[in-house]
Image (tube, rainbow, N blue to C red; front, side, top):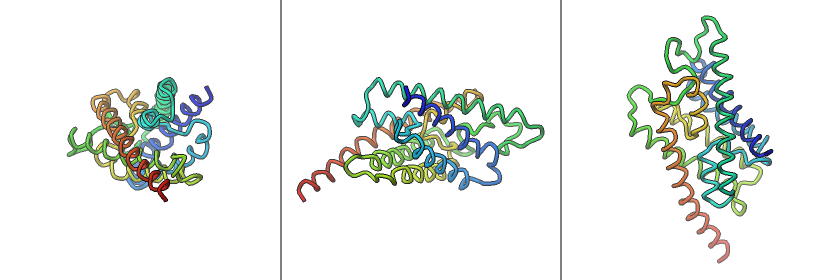
Length: 233
């Protein structure tokens, strides 16, 4: 139960603080600042709840960990449920903030139906472009997670730093396409209170899941080679 609580609270803060940076300060800090905030929030969470739940705070990461044999199917389901609930609570706080101000330009999108940092296609982007982007960025991010936390070749105490930097990087690249998801829970939370965003939600589920699966296959091939070389050496 402690693991599920940690995942729920962690995902809540990821949505509240990271998405909140776009909602409350987006025009001031731009894409680079928002990406940095996503990365910093995850670094903090990794060192806060990493030893409790592993700090997945992302169904795509949990999927990869399960497929890698590092957690049971029952745990996987529990993690995803906790992450979605936590994301919805974080989204609720953002919604509350967006309705509490008077004349405040939240995220620079006053009058828009998308004002909670929801994951929707940006001007000029297509569904195909977004799907490929989500799959590739999630592939990269999940590879970092699997590698940094591998018991044999992982980064040890620096794992959280590597993982957080990875999330920041993919956000800087992905935000101009669809506000960058690589995390179905991160997309779900704000969309609950901005239902119009559910039109593109399938991309934020399918893309990250594909990327996570490919990352698992790739990491197994790479880590198997590394381990074999170590044994031969």
